[in-house]
Image (cartoon, rainbow, N blue to C red; front, side, top):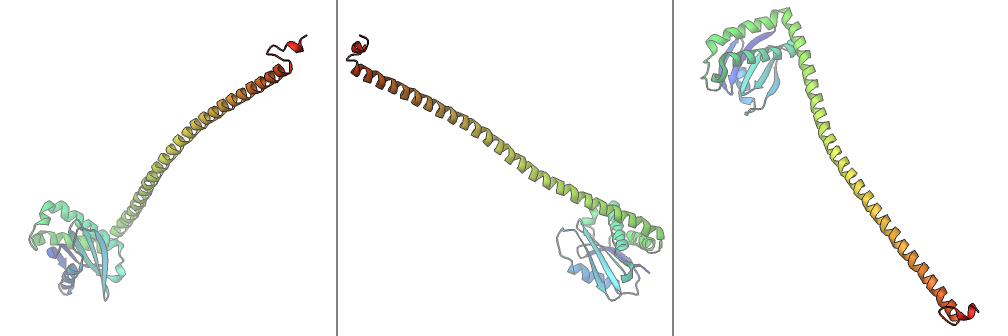
Length: 221
């Protein structure tokens, strides 16, 4: 048969439901509402019971739930839940956060019944939702890729910063090396000049001693 029961709730407060009254789906669904963790975290969960699966979508503080046969798969039930959530929020807006129990049941139970029949029996629904599912997967992959690019961008920014720092250190090292080389060159130049002067003075002193005077008188007779 497909989807047999559907419910929209806020926490444990049931706002609207529709289903086959012969089954105990409503009772089981209320028990499941108590098991769903409180808070605003979004989640998609499936619970099995005999030959049936309860599919639960929690988004923006609202819980949308349906019961389907176990051989009906998951794609169509969760597409149904997504559709119901959008219709419910679009119809009632902010009032869903303060409405009393079953406040929307008279009007929205008919919508639940119509969409249950559509997703269960209309062959086009599966084809359309298959495309939606593929598009959703592509969107998820794109978001993941963008996040990876952004994450890689952060790493690249860090790498650029490190590269800039390395380039700055390299320039400083080159300047320091050049100054050091200049200092060594001048030190060697002064040392060489002093050594040459010392040799010249030593030679002059020796010649002056041998030639008996500063003007070398005995050597130029």
